Image (cartoon, rainbow, N blue to C red; front, side, top):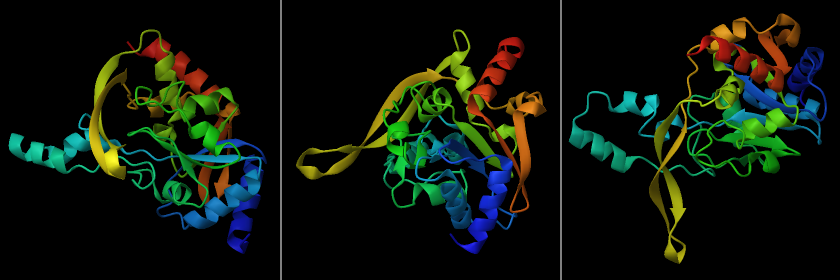
Length: 261
């Protein structure tokens, strides 16, 4: 382990990261001086061979129904929108980069031995002992529910590490949206890579129904998460939080049940 990674590892241990943990990391390294490669080395070193590091590898621009796509086509004519749609590259879990998830998530996704789930919008990438198992079986009609890697992490005692980001970026809260009685649903549409006869590869548009995802109140939900359930510290000079994924989901579910219509 490099000297820089070793120093970060000491801080991660002080924060509460332990060997063998299953850890979902959200990071924003811009302006912190942290290097993605060193942080990945430090985290995998602390987690050890029995641990697993998980990051979001989301691709929201892949869908014609996402806000990211709608922003791209705003102001275009109908013909221009159709042409844009025809040019959209299909999601391929092996090569499609994440969008808006940060340099650290990409450093994990592209690391040797990394595994990625197959969801065309909300995939996760993972390194470590349970990477393949956590990332398998991620159906399209379950962005961030029980059948996603997020649901598996919650059931298996996973933790959430947040570096230089606030609760507005806490993906764990989305799992609570699936646990609300009769959650609102909507249609989604994505383009994915498919295998064609003769070993060729093409693309196909798929449509599916899933829960409406809304992170507009996540900062407020996080603001009422008990301080006693969050460990806070510094990692490379950047603010960091560590907490139980299941406890965060339970808190979000209680808040949503009381405050969302």
